[in-house]
Structure formats: C-alpha cells, structure tokens
Length: 223
Picture: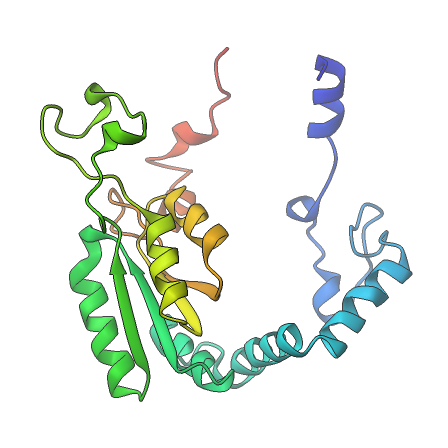
C-alpha cells in the first residue's frame, strides 16, 4: 500500500468519530459519514431477515437483547452469563481457563453448578507441550532452560467440542490464544475475564488513564 493510500484509509470516519449516536434512539440526525445510514437498504434488510429466519442466530440475538432489557445495570457479568445460558437452553458449559486464573475458574464452576448448569473445564496448559516444539525459541520463554508448556487453545477447543458443550466461556486466556480458541470452538463463545496481568484483568483501565499514567499510548509511533 502506498503512503497516499494509507493516509486516505486513516482519514475515513467511522463510528468512533461520531458524537451523535442517533442509531440508538433515532432522536437526532445521522452524520454524513454514518456507516448504517449509508448502507444499502437491501443489505440491512438481509441482516434483519437473517435474525428473523435463522433459528439459532435469532434465538441468541433475542436472548441477549432480552437480558439487556431486563437486567441492565442490575446483574454482574457472571450472573448475565448464567441468565444467558438458561435463556438459550444451554446446559453444558465449557470453561476455557488460563492457568493463572484457575482459582477464579473454580469459583465460577461452583456458581454454574449451584445454578443448575453442568460445567466442563479445560486449562490452557493441557497436553503440556513445550514451547520449543512449535518453533518458539528457548530464549523467548519466560524461564529459558526449563520445560515451559505452550498455552494450547486449539486443544482446549477440541476437548470442549468432544464434550459437546452448549456454550463456552473464556476465563482469562492470553491475547491471541483467545482468538484461536474462538476460531476452533464449535459452540458459541463468550468471555467472563479478559486477561491483563498489569491492571488486575481490567484492560479498560489503560483507556481511562490515557490522560495520566498511560498517556504514552497516545504518542505517535516513531518510525
């Protein structure tokens, strides 16, 4: 891509440049660059029809919207996942957990059981395959010179697929590993915890602190 193309692409306005948010209540006016307003109506109609006619996707979309309507600012994420599972008829819940958040996963499993659900958990280090076996250099390990197992999200997904889970929940998988897990999971995936070791698994804190401690994140990247 040329420099000119890059400049053109980066100058395109999308939803984060919108200060109107008319799409929610239709009580204002759309900006000229609105993605939804500029979408061909036949394309929008196809999506709406899909929600209406696709049994699984429609059921999921309605369940998610109903939970939002009934419990907005009332339920925690844990409770919302339980409510969602019940609403879509999910019984067996896969838990794809990070080794570092196993204690949290254990508590979540106890909650699922108490709420009449059947948890099935698989930890990220399952299979205990050393990182060097997939081409990671020894010096790239956290502790070079020792056996250090890869996070194995594909095997996690495979084992939960074999267990025929109805809904899978991510508990702190690393960035990228979560992507692979979602890619290979047959069941729907939702996230309970997003890992951020520095910020106590609250990645949004980095965004809130861009005026202070994390203002360096907004500094232009040097060539």
